Image 1 (cartoon, rainbow, N blue to C red):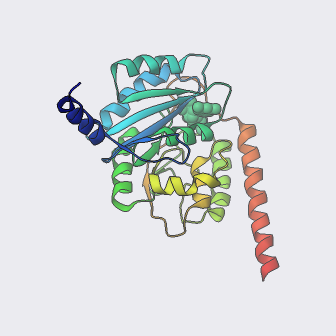
Image 2 (image 1 turned 90 degrees about the horizontal axis):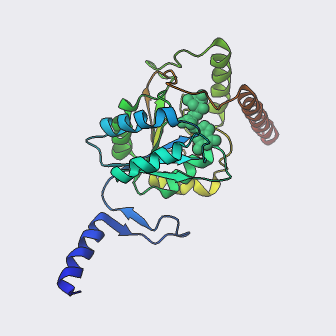
Length: 271
Ligand SMILES: Nc1nc2c(ncn2[C@@H]2O[C@H](COP(=O)(O)OP(=O)(O)O)[C@@H](O)[C@H]2O)c(=O)[nH]1
Ligand SMILES: [Mg+2]
């Protein structure tokens, strides 16, 4: 093949991707222009996934983006549906994790495989208002740091939760706020966007177990990291059931309480 064919072809590829040396070769190729990578973690969301991807594609019409579904080998075949969609739509792809479970670790895996400079996450069950995505993206592009879809700033709400879940979430949120390094009102939201440099900085410290990946990031963020919060109302799941059991919530609350007490004890010892 002549150099006249190869050279233009290479420059197109080079425009699309920059070859960034990676420490672990996990994501050697990245876009060189601004792109939002939206991660949708899924477990048994076959009934929801087509509609939520269509909605994300619609609201992100004016934002360069990619959508990565990280599915833990759902028995209902969620990953298979996404594979089918990705054959027609290059903006969409699926990572099928086999032998692993966990929302937070799925999000981290999605972020690591993403090529965008802004990394976002949202539930794939209709409970997050995707219309907020372009604004979360714009806030991170403009200020850096993290932009959070928040249920606890003015104008936001947990929606139709029962009293028990409301109380549990309120308690956990109040404890979590005391542990975070930056001021924030909804540190356990599952709906946020973060700049790649912030994610790369905290990555070595993350212990992504359980449900609360934003809280993990906020625990290790730098104190002057910009945080933008935008209100939204937590919606109603379209189909299927929540995977967050009450037992998991209580265990998390107990962990938070222990951490707050430990920190307080540490402060008392120092003074
Ligand atoms: N990959 C993966 N996704 C999960 C897992 N657990 C929950 N999810 C997804 O994470 C999102 C939030 O979970 P959900 O059960 O709706 O929690 P809730 O909104 O707090 O009731 C949904 O898109 C789920 O499908 C998991 O173990 N692995
Ligand atoms: Mg949900």
